[in-house]
Image (tube, rainbow, N blue to C red; front, side):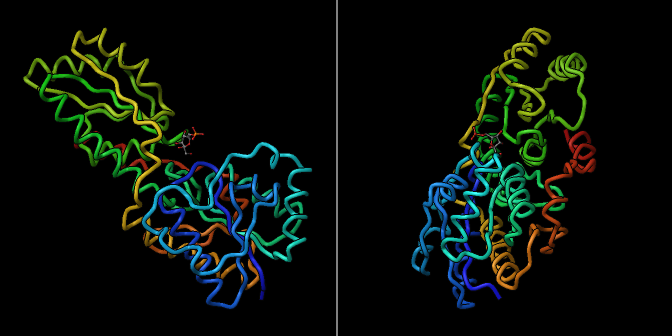
Amino acid sequence: MLKSIAVMTSGGDSPGMNAAVRAVTRTALHQGVKVWGIRGGYHGLLDEEMFEMVSKDVSDIIQRGGTFLGTARCKRFQTPEGRMLGYKNLVDRGIQGLVVVGGDGSLRGASTLSKETGIPIVGLPGTIDNDVWGSDYTIGCDTAANTIIDAMNKLRDTASAHRRIIVLEVMGRNSGWLAMVAGISGGAEYILVPEEPFDLDAICENMKEEYAKGKRYILMVVAEGAGKAAEIGPIVAEKTGLDTRVSKLGHIQRGGSPSVIDRVKASQLGEHAALAIISGLSDIVFGFNRGHVVSINLHDAVNNKKTLDPMYMRLAKVLA
Ligand code: F6P
């Protein structure tokens, strides 16, 4: 049984990270284990920005987006010297295990730290991109998808009013998951994702035909990994001759009060992470598979690339 653990959020923030940290903290305290909060991701680990938490420290945060601990992408932690300093800072405080909530890059850092030092580490997938291998869910992806749909509903009003094509760029880094699920549930006519090649000429021809048949407007969702709306929009305008506008949602997608799904799933994952690390388990990421919490090998999670279920591609085409 470990007696003292730490928890941190790292990389891009995502709605639900707070719920995860709250669950880790309260579960550990419930087990009589000390919990340290690390501020600002790996930066805080290196700069000794850590504090011992009590239950009240995680009050009033479950409903908030972002992460109350703060987060960062930390170049120094990518060096062996940086990681050794981080390890020393943990050991100096008697911290015996670490829970890292973050995306691909953050979990990669955790994987290396564990290999180099042997300190027990449990990861939780925290990113709006839903791109962590082994889990069909990452904390924040549901809220982000809902934010995109909300924007699409609004864009639809103005697109319809003006008979316009709207090209909407959404986040996701190299993954098309966000674009795909938002596109399907927001009723987009075209969804461009990095996982599937597309023929813009053919798409534009199709758009002209649809307009000729009486279509009033078109929504096209572009995953940032598939291309830039600022470049695709003008091409569409030129090739179709149709009134076209471009919209990029940007960091709005990362914020906002977490959805019920993100709050509940992050809480479940947080509880699992705390219990696992306290019992001495290590090198695990907890995620979801078909609705159930599963444990994934940390190193496998960061060394494999998650693919987009082809079911989405098929469905998007049938429904468009
Ligand atoms: O990984 C989350 C994410 O929001 C990606 O979708 C996006 O490409 C990236 O982070 C943006 O990073 P930053 O906040 O550093 O601009």
